[in-house]
Length: 512
Image (cartoon, rainbow, N blue to C red; front, side, top):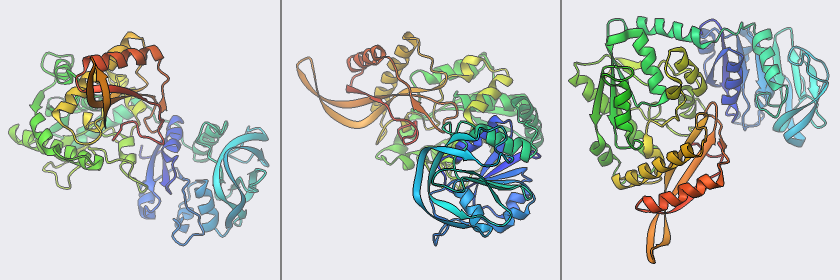
């Protein structure tokens, strides 16, 4: 990790996570940093290369994000994408102006010179454009390597200084050779060997955890989900009996989840860990009473989690570290210099002051599919590694509006029915999330000749590999009809069932 890293400087582009995914697919480690990161910070990471992302601004605007000239003196290759290309041109003395014709979507691309990025790329191909400005004058030392009908500088390079720029988005599927272009940048131009593998990551991380923890003790927040389970396995391998797992039943779990966690991880279970179970349902319900704002709910849940862990730690004889199953999408969505999509309870929801010596988050650099690969590498059973993820705030982010014990009951029962129908109809749920959520909408219905005024449940089914983007799954109508019939007949308080077809983006996977 220390010797083969690509840094991605974020200028607010919507595809920054996808750039990171594509680079990781080349078996090269990468991180996303705000574009405002000091050059000293960037230099200290010893990157093999730097990528400048797209963004919504115009480089000639009064408050436009800038590209520090010092970046070009670091001696490492740079790749500018979309706004990043324009920022590079602007910083080096080129000219960027409004385009005569804006380009959005699939666009025919003509390769003028293969250069380093376009080796083996057909002379005529397609790319994905999304811009209203364009480079109209090259900086000194650059040459054009590709163009479109309306964009004379669709790509440029200064091979001597190893500076490259593309106006289009190579990271999206709609640019057919885009993955190859990124691979050439990180492997050929930056000289990365592609050594990012889960086996090497596991070995390195186990050694690092042993050195960090020493003879101290660690308290792990174990939910039974994929992330915390993999974290538990990694820590158990690294520090053994110095790990204590605490499972908090916050009253926002799936039906029978608490009992299942104790069977798997508790004494005599499959993993036979030191597991402490805390019933905090009343505490969480009291803290959430009257609260309907999603961000406030997340912060409250995060605060209560930490306080329960602190109290449990004191009762166990003071633990030194708190461990969490934080993963990279949690960090990115909670803010890396761009918009905060949602504050994850274990990132943006953490309180300012902790009584622990520090946090241990070994999965923080990993995307969800990488976490699964690590779990298999550590010997966890496949059925656990590929179970559907469950958010830390639990049903609190699947209940729109105020959370109450009654709403939790309704949702637990509705979700259990949906899971049963998915299983009965043979739907593979390992590559996404399939769940019921409770809306804050009540509507008039009729049951047994009586008027009802009850809640609407929404069914959500999405497929995803990295949880940064997701696509709605086309479930069989027979399944949806059967689930609907059972929910309205078996769950007291529901008289309407909806199906959510929205992808991510524009929606998030969870409702709140």
